[in-house]
Image (tube, rainbow, N blue to C red; front, side, top):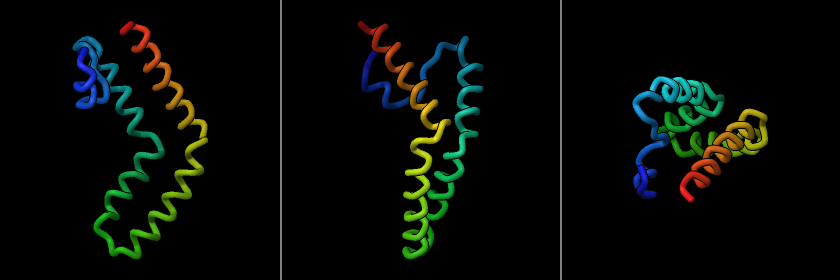
Length: 91
């Protein structure tokens, strides 16, 4: 996919031969600690406002703690490296 706007539709684009690896990678990413917390936030969206505020306060604290955790920093580094390699291939 060469159109930059098209990249907004998909998280990852791979050839058919790379599907199995891409699926395995997606499964690993979905097992990350942040996924459960984000899912919980979606479930609480229908809760009373005071309960939602309490959750958001807790969520903000957890986000600050998680922002510098080893797994988050490693994930950011991997994505940054992929981005840099794509930019190098486009020039």
